Structures are given as structure tokens and as C-alpha cells.
Image (tube, helix red, strand yellow):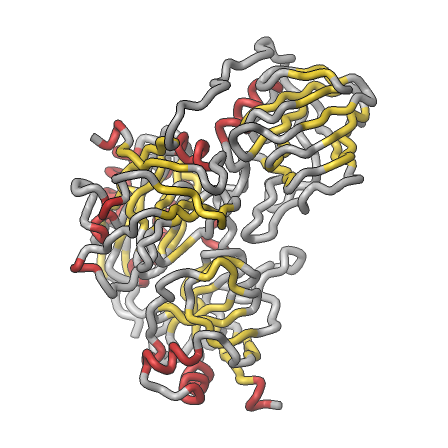
Length: 295
Length: 233
């Protein structure tokens, strides 16, 4: 059996896969990797199915020892990493000899780095998934020092691509997040008029950010006069939903969002914008812009 | 008052980004009818199921979640075609004063009415704190649908005087066992989570236990009676 022995953790290390879709009616959300693009890239580099689980490492700080020879890849936030003290590249397949130690430092930008091990992290699934849902508490507990995480059997052919190009430097200024119309756009004056100011100016990620969602401070979103004081009957929520409570301070839902909610969703981030939003740190500036497809 | 069903249900299809559609209908009866039809279509693998990964009922809506790249215009057309065959059973959900079906399970939930929003609910309803408690415990509630979080059940059919809006700003953290009101619903938070409901009190009842079968204490159709622990001690 091959495994990862955990020698140190940073602020938070979770096991995440593609999530557990299909259970919302009993209140179980999909959850899964917060940055699906990064998780998927890791799976592709490792040459295993996207349903396999990886480690989602918040702000680095993880040190693991290989029990058996492993093949790994790091994707997502570019945490500087070393293998037995020697630097290893990001978004590249890395051969880890038995007993070698892999250490992740703090990424200069972004929040979540994915450590994918070929074969996947093979802890017992809960309701069909190995993802930790931080809102519901379902799935494996957070990874702790001393854990020995089993690695699944490699399947499929050995990958032929061993490196993926990735932007090493982000453009300056606020991160641009593309938005599509939400079901309750009319509540803030409609899509054509700019969603009550949501699409104007920069907003800043508030300190209260986690896998459930993040609050965006900035000018308050004005509710249209016709909808003031109106209560929305609870309805299903989606990842990427931009919800506007009466306070006017928008909330953006990430992977562990509640499956239903009662504040109007005026816009929804595209899936790819949602993955980038999952890499935002408190204090980062963002601008919400119309997604090209929305015209 | 279960009446003859009528064929067809009016559905408004609302956009919800690039991985879903929100279907709005007139009321909860129509939601349950449409949800049932959609689930059957998904199980049968029909056109209205292509790319659908989840069906999420709400008070007046059914959310369809899809995989990335699903053909949403085609799904929309398929759903609208399907909606013409949906039959809505009137009174399938308990209203005030309606007798529950004799077979429906009943659960008693003991509550300490010490919630932070008791005064606010009293002010908004024109009742005293004691009258709010009496109203909440006086009539049986019934599970309409689940959602929000594992084990959370939207309860309907309680005292109509208790209709209050959600809080203006949601709390980042509501404790497990918190008993709240929002709109015409009551509910119990199964575990600590963010939430915007008006909180009346707390219970020690375990709403969700993944090692229990079924994990949810309040399944569909369950009758719920809230009991004031102060009154019984």
C-alpha cells in the first residue's frame, strides 16, 4: 500500500473530490474542490479520473512523507514547494521516491493549492464522495498531523503530458469576475441597468470568507422600489450565486454554499469565474463584469 | 380537500448562470407536482433530464442543476413541454387546521424559548413573548420539503400570526438546534451554519445523524409539535 504521512499542516488541509451531486433535496450540497479547474488539472496531470480526491491546502504549510513511491502534481495557488529540500515546479508531474518529504510554503497569491497524488486520496467515502463539506460536516475530517492517508490504485495509462502552462503573474488591479443574470435580477432593477450598481466599481473581499462563501464590501446594492420589504420564499441556491440581503452587501456562494436560501440571487458567476473567486483572499479587490455570453 | 388534479402547470423559467435553470410555479402544491414529474423524467432518462445533476425543490420553485456545458435552451424547451402533462393535487401540503394523514409520523421537539429574536418577533407580530411561544407550540407543523442543510426541514401549517421576514443581515453563525421562523415557515438548524431566520429558541434534538437510518429526523410528511420545556418542567 502507498500512502501520505502528514508531518505538518498549515491553517487548513481538506480532502476534496468532484463532490456529491444529486442530494440537495435532503439538504446535502455538492461541495467538492473549491477551485474545480485546479482540481481537474491535477487529475489530468496525474492521469486519473476527475472523481478521485486530492488535498486542498489553504495557504500552504503542508509537509508530507511518501510511504511508497508516488507521483504527484501541485495545481491552484502557486505554493513554493520542495522535495527533500530541492524546489519542484508547479503544475508539473513530480516523482516522489519512497520516504521523500514534500513541503509546501505559503503561496504569494491565491488561497488554495491542490496536491494531487496519482491514484487519489483513498479515505472512506461518505454518501458517495470523499469531499469534506464544511457547512454540513459531511465527509472526512480535516487532515491532521500524524494522519496516514491511503493512496488509491493508479488506473488508466501513465500520463503523457507532464507539465501544464499556467499564468505565473496575475494582471494588476482588481480580479475580474464574469457574471450572468440571476433569477432575481429584477429585484435590484434588472440586468440591463447594471444590477443596482453591482457591476460598477471595485469591491473588496471581506474578512469573513471561507468555503461557504465570501462577502463583498463596497457601495450597497439598492433594491428596486417595487421589491422593497418583499420576502423571497426559500429557493435552491447554486455555486457562484451573488445574493443580496436587504443590507445591500452582496454575498458570493462558493463550493459549500447552503442548498437553499431566502435572499434574492441577482447574478451568478460563470463556472470559471467561480473557480477564480475561490482563490481570493480577504482584502483582495474584485470587479464584477457582464459575461460575454450574456450580451 | 384533495381535489381533482388539473392538467398542466404554468412554469416561468428563470436564468441561474451557466449550470442550471430555476423553474417558478404558483405555489407549493405545484412545486411538489412538478418536482415529482421531473424526478420521474430524470429516472427515465428523458429529454428533460439531459445533463441534469440535481432537482432542488423550494417553496415556489424547482431548481435544476446541470453539468458543465449542458444545453440549457434545449433543457428549457423540454421542461416546458413536460410541464403541460403535470397534474397538481390540491391540498397535498398541510395548510392551517388541516388534519395530517393518519399514517404520517409525529415528532415532538422540546424547545427552550430563549432565542435572540424573540423580542423582534413579538414586536413584528404584535404578540407578547409568551404569546409567540404559545402560538409556536399551539398548532402542529408539517414538513413541506427539505433543503438548506442536511436534515433541515421547511415546516408549514403553523399559526399564521407568526409570519415574519428574515433578518436584514444574516448571522455568520447560528448554533445547532436553533429554532427559527422565516416567512410562513418554521425550522430547526441541524448544525451550526450561517443563517437569516428569526431565532425563537434552541432544542437538543438531533436533526441529522449520518449513522442513523434515515439520517434526517424530520422526513417528508412528518408532523412536528414544538413543546416548551419551561411549561413541562
